[in-house]
Length: 301
Image (cartoon, rainbow, N blue to C red):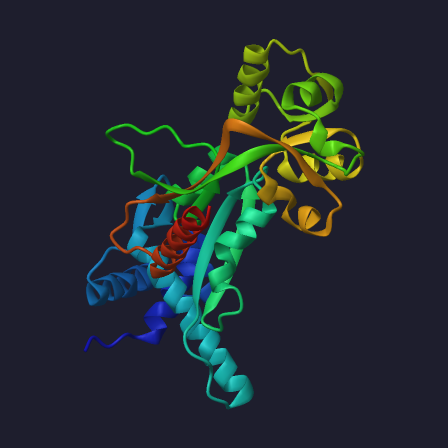
């Protein structure tokens, strides 16, 4: 069995954190040549390059990112042992999930639900713009990105796009007298509407629907965030165009109701990963759980 030198791991972690040999050498009070020599020894032991040079800095390779995760876990365990003199729990593995900032929070929680509460898993959840999240995925700062917009792919793209769920879209608002008696066309004509912003795929589908029906909608508000659409509906600003999963809790309590289903319009939820030599096994777990949940939902529909 290959024997790892913890001193080499300590030097490696310092270089990974600083991004330069110079800064790590200053922090550790060692010469750059000594650190460089011992890093090469560690790489030879592991059988993989851990860094690649970019400009004047050093950037972790995929193997380097994995090695850093394990190095951090090793030193955390050592710190726990020294502090408590107790047996530490099993090794913890991190899953870094990025989600489009406008994506339904209910959907995000549902996606990571199989891992919540597990003692061997640490969840890191970040949100942001799609371009930033994809850069994080490429830099291996994220393991998976949740979105409702498929990234552009070509023959050179390493993106893998997984279809997780396709949710129906409805007009949702507060309870009203004779709410079930009005047709979709009547609702779209008479009621103020809360719509996604024009650049979204959901809004494009809605605009096509009202164009076919020959209706000019009364727009009360627009928002690019599903959470804001939900809050505007709760504030009685109008009927919101959104997937019912976004307002699952409000529908369950009767605070909001589905006034009409927008047949033919759906919202797709996707997961984006990268082809990697060393995939995080937790990614496969959550994708399989999402696949099974989607299959069960279709079976019960």
